[in-house]
Image (tube, rainbow, N blue to C red; front, top):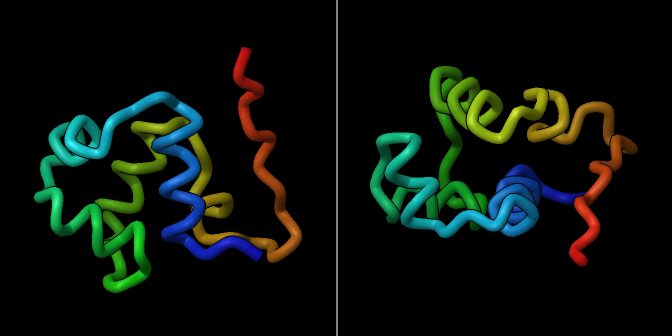
Length: 77
């Protein structure tokens, strides 16, 4: 099962975003994004919502609920 950080990292990669671009869009520091991606810190509800809106995913997906939920990763051409 993927962690929240691993799911966030996959969203960044699958959507061809850069980490600085995501940090700027979410109005957070790059260090904060690093901490989330590496499961070193938890995000607030407001930031969870912002991430979900930015990537157009549910909070359930990002949090791994239910545990067997699988993201349909975007196929790269």
